[in-house]
Length: 378
Image 1: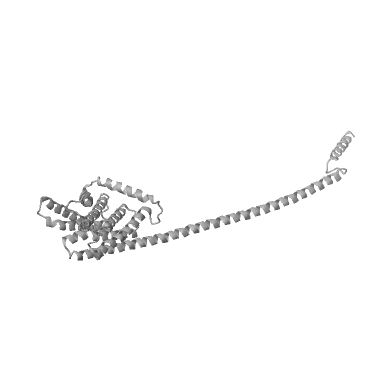
Image 2: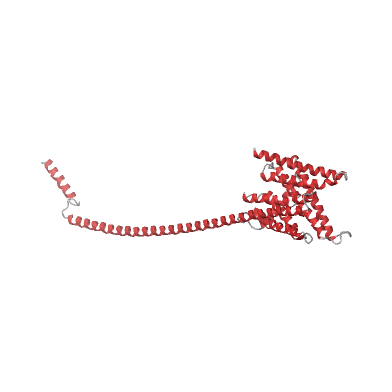
């Protein structure tokens, strides 16, 4: 009985306890349903808001994407435009460079041909081949200038005008041309006058252009002050190079010193003739001035050739085509000088020494030119 009452009490207590829960209370069931309905409504509202936010965010994202694509497209178009402009500018500059190079090479060629013609006219005016005429045309004269201009033409074609060698040769051409243009031609006649002035003018113009392109580049990208700086550095380098004497370059430095000294002597004689003339030299005639100026310029050109060869010898570069040509040119110049001095042979020890020394330099230059020419072919 007690056991049955205990079981009954337990069941009654459990029923009483479970009556307050949603699952078993019939009284609370409507309330439970009400809360469920509100929760479902709340979830539906939340879903609608989330959908709205998602849609808005999607719209904003798509708009941002579209704007970003538009900006990228504009940037790409701008970059392509800039690249196109740069390519157009580069193409235009390339055409200018081609035109400049073509005009300069043609200018060098024309000046070279006119100097060769001037040499022929000079030989005819001298009455043929004599010691004096050979000395004039080969000893730093029109033939020498013609060959130098031919060498410069090759340097322009191969973009080597920036080298110190070709800058030096361009300066030699400029100086030679200036002297020729300054020489009075009143007593020379029309043909000889033109033989001096026309090639002188052409070589002056193209020498200046060649030296300028060598300093500034074909595109002239450097400032004009670079020309003055380069000239100053070139003079300093030349003076410094004169103090460096190597055994293999002794012949060249001797030749450069002889020709340079003689050119300075002629300059002094010219200054004396113009400003402090003696009684026998009054008045200074055009022919006298022509002779002094001509020798000064020609000896200066030969001195430049010899220093250029000395510099190349110091650097073991005599096998280059330019230096082979300059060696043969130096041999021709010194041979013509030796031939010119030959009539003085026996008049004194100094005259004999001059002939021997000049002849020795001519032979040395010729042999070095031959040796390097053969080595180059091998």
